[in-house]
Image 1 (cartoon, rainbow, N blue to C red):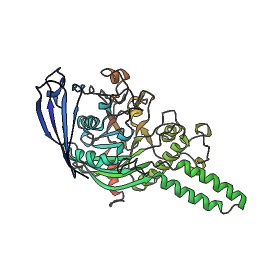
Image 2 (cartoon, rainbow, N blue to C red):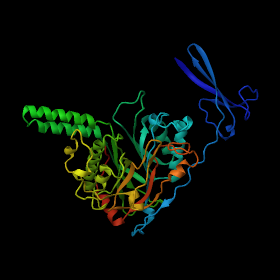
Image 3 (cartoon, rainbow, N blue to C red):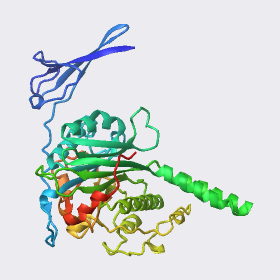
Image 4 (cartoon, rainbow, N blue to C red):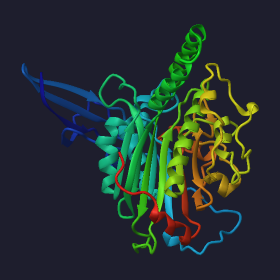
Length: 457
């Protein structure tokens, strides 16, 4: 049994060892964060805990306190090569940011041996994460790998103080050891600009179980031996699909423009946030998950006449079947009739046949592609992998990308620390994507006011 614990912190003279008698008391309390005054000094920490057996004390001595590295340099603004043709004021625009923030449960020295332990620590990285949000000030913020306990203790209260309202959906697996040690997706929006009209979640495990039940129903019509074989294959497929990934879906209604004015016609948007399964040996599962998601979003947005913004870490490169499936429409110009057999990944459990034709009817474009006519070289930059995995897809017939923040070059990422991500300047192994968007015309968005309403679940 334990009681309250408190600590006392003393600062040593610069460049002196712990035998010096000239220590200065700087703090008494529970949590101490070193300040600029501590740089070049060592700290001696004495912690006292009151227990049933009395008071227990321990003392620790730190290494010399280092100065904080400088913040990352400002990112260059990208503009489309072709000037936009619109009658809508930029006052009706909004900024969207998506970022895989690297959950603490995955930020290990084994995965990132080049990053100092103090820079991997959540208490340090969370400051960088929040500073980036404050710096770029998005209106809509989609985050992946948000740890459940950190959403409650850090993300929600910190972002609420900055004027955001937010929602969270954790993965459907059990926590890693302690309660809250599981990651998920978080979606935030500026409450001064948007009203939450509807909210939903998609659990890919649940979709897989529904598919399995439906396919087993069909198998009942087969002869006993054939049915047993088909059910056996289906069980293998189900086990391959149960990966616990989730997606968020919301409908946001713009209540105020950037200047604070009330829009003449309500603008409603469907925003979705997801994190697709990571393993490169499971490209079939990634394609199954994303196709299921886009077909659900297609039904949802078409029935409500809503433009779509889909953000996330899709764990898929631009040459992948997942990317080609999203881009397979008349707007992007890639195989509007859907993927061909040559596009498909290996499918050892025959799970893709359950999805039927791997196509969709939404006029989607990648926001970075719309601006730069190419995808970035990388959004994930580590010591063991470099590649583009994160995207912001949008309804190109209803929305347009006005500008975006260019991603830093590899030389910039390594300029101060000499290492890949995460490092002392960048909080995650992924880079954020940031885009400014606006409607093509207010005539289009006026029709959105007639879409469905009411609170979702």
